[in-house]
Amino acid sequence: MAFLTGSDIIFDRIGGVLGDARLRLGFSCATLALADVGIMMFDSVAAVSVSCVGKNLVIDPVSEKENYQNGSLMIACLPSRNEVTQLIITEEWSSPKIHEAVELCLDECTKA
Image (cartoon, rainbow, N blue to C red):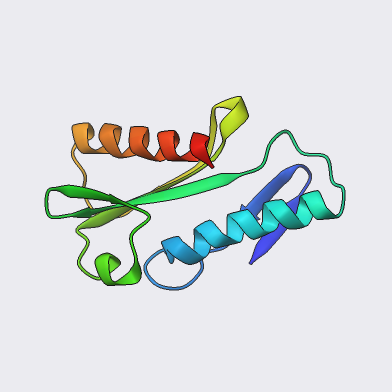
């Protein structure tokens, strides 16, 4: 569920632990809907998640991988402005792992 307040879009928690896949989809759909009706925006919102499965980081995992994750990190950002609009982390992560996951997500967001 999305709420429009002023110039900010606030997303409510959607399904599962975080429902990363559905939440990412929600960001994309809301961005497209706002653009479709002609609302001026600074940038389109891109969202990417990373799951920690054992010692590996998996970008935008399928639901089977999410079942075996040790934690997840999801970033929504405005790629052209290089701004993170939302960061959600589940479970415990070491600082180097968070840094690596954030860099992977930001790199993927700029490709979107």
